[in-house]
Length: 272
Ligand code: NDP
Image (cartoon, rainbow, N blue to C red; front, side, top):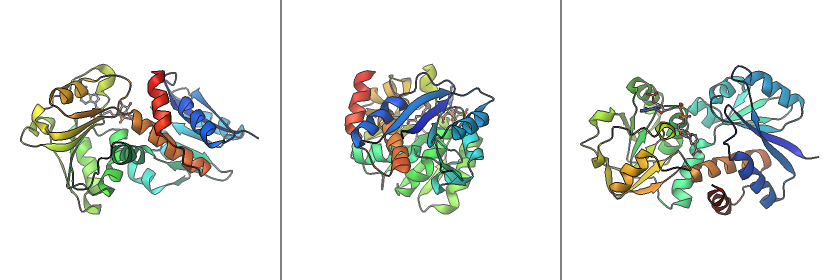
């Protein structure tokens, strides 16, 4: 019996998840199907019930349903609880188990694929939406020297800070986008959606230290953030590696086998 999986979002047409998971399945000889499913904006819960009835084993969740998936889950992994959002659901016949693999995906891309240790680094995390929330705790677990959160709406960054401040030895603080001109960072992560609209963030170019890694979670296009970082000699990387690594982490959770990711990253890059 072929086990059924899918990614659910709205919109969903652009999703590369089927390509990635089908490649993982082929590589690891797993008998699974994986498709993309469009859920109506007001019909996420009904769609999940329908898929459970049809015997699906699990789904990945993308925009805008990660919060609803968090609320729907009857069991949550620790990292989903920290993130307050779910990007992976597993159906085991009894529970709807929610996980969040975004942070693990980002950390694995930076540390294993790019060979940049996070420990001891000064990190700037730009954004306070679902993606930023998902990566904050996993980044802190790597023990950076400093982590500064900045966001257009500062209150959201402050809310993120208040959730982690008491639980970490790392020096974590919030700083307005306008107040960054005196600071330099070793790793700057753009977790905003500004790349989607080609909007430039009002960032001072002085934030990039020598040998800085500028990581944009957006993939498949050169964003204004990437252009700015490139013009200040940063090492610029997009979010394709994170995408493939978070998928590998979900695949591992479902199938108990960790696929090899570099070959899949290459395939996706060549297909875009
Ligand atoms: P959300 O909608 O939850 O958050 C959007 C964030 O972007 C907020 O911090 C928001 O600030 C900020 N923002 C939006 N527009 C502007 C603007 N004009 N100027 C300044 N800041 C702005 O989105 P997500 O967190 O879910 O996703 C963020 C990005 O990460 C997306 O591009 C997504 O594609 C990418 N992503 C990539 C993944 C990967 O695997 N590579 C995985 C998950 C996400 P404010 O709070 O002020 O509104």
